[in-house]
Image (cartoon, rainbow, N blue to C red; front, top):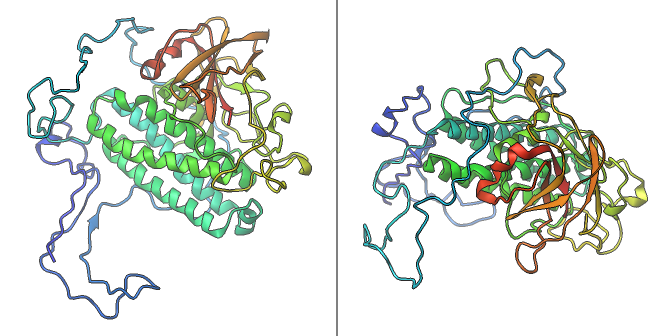
Length: 492
């Protein structure tokens, strides 16, 4: 047998000289072995418990340690009860308060009308163009403040997922899961997802260096398995969308490459939690990207405290937008949801299971009514629909939030006037009809991405804004100066 050598994402030699990270951060991930020769097949070893296929001895492969042990027991959780020693997001400047409208980039002129090569190929079978394709050695480290704080935000997200998945398994018994329609095998699947997060946290930590944020303490909004699964699908939704929103703006294309390979896994997790909740696993044609400050706004309320000197994030925390009649995912008829059928008043709190037994869909009879875990259900009634009145209440800026209550919500927007619906490739506005200083309503828009695909679907993002600027997925962050409050909407 030939010798094996596998080297994955090894940032080597001169490529790291300029960054000079602390020892231990010079290699992002690695697994390698260089044996010579091979052992004879063993007659006593087989490939699996039921397999009769002989397995040869294979070389051991070394790998760097993970940044966190895989927690299996209960850990400390709950709200922060101390006094913050620092408040507000760190800022430097800023040099401006809004971005100028510069029009299309002067280099954005390429168009190929006939499908023929327009330039000489640099190598055989290699069309001209692309970034990082000129033979330079990849450097798998952040390359700007934008990169650093975007990946640090991603790491905060990976840490909470690692803790959250383990915490639900530790808090709830196999019988609790069985009562929610989930088996012991489903528990092992969630445990595997938690172990995936260990790998993701290790990867992001190594791309940041010694200032990478560590794991924190969290405060969760669920009391049973259904609420646990519901919260998981919401948290992974904004975690995934938060990365899609910034990944193509990173200065380091190498970091973006590895991040894409991790966030694709998170997309599968979100889909799986939707199936465990009895929802359609992927009711959209495209996944949504959101700005970093949106992702941080959704995440921060569930982090109760972090160790001293943890790297702080400069992203904005917007006031919370409460969707008063947000659909309860546990109802046979979700559009009969009463006001505030959620477990609390934080931005991503799950639907409560504290509703009449005859209204619950978990054990309902008949196709279209039941929402027990499944690959997919055909639902008789959607969670929401175009033309439905959606009612809102929103908080005022200036409230403490996040780790150690040390961040403060803020908004630079003017009079609340519109509702922005962000889903798939679309940003759609509807008029906000105010009913008070911090309350109002609108009607859910129809809208389409392409013919046959409604834009408003899935767990999606809504904002109260002071105006309705035309923006697209690549420049959506320009909406931030217009945002009064942010919410999370259950549309399908």
